[in-house]
Image (tube, rainbow, N blue to C red):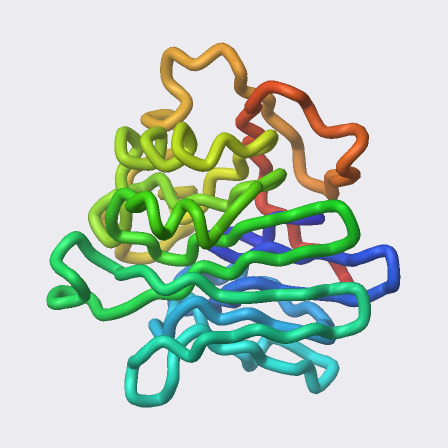
Length: 223
């Protein structure tokens, strides 16, 4: 797996499926990557999460929302990837401010990953139950448009993932996003590892038993 920046990750499965989450374009950062994918997931239809122009390879696109802005109820399999969505909101007012958002749960073999998109509120018990066991959690932490650092920790405590991958926070080169950096999320925490640019190997048998936060440097792979 690689972090492509913002809420976008690149995952290659054992069967060779190349999956990209929530792609963004140059309106977010001039460093927006160009990658080839078989599958793209889109949590909601905002410009910083649904930019497909930089995705090559004629991928399948799994959209969490319908064109009308309602939840799409995805439940689909592509080779060794099974995905389903959990309906949530982009804000703490039942969608009145920013609409709806879809969490994507990805099952690849024994590994379960959850991409929270632009989650705007703390999860309730029903949503936690629908998400189920999480090995790897991709979670927004920058606030303003999404949950902030304190709320993100409440979500982490509810889901109890083995690895937390923070996303949707302020990084150099970002254009016009009034959001916080990752340090507000990691401050005072002992369970934080920082990785340089490049890929991480996610295997269920080698993940930590206790929750760790892995802060990734954005990568621009030629893939």
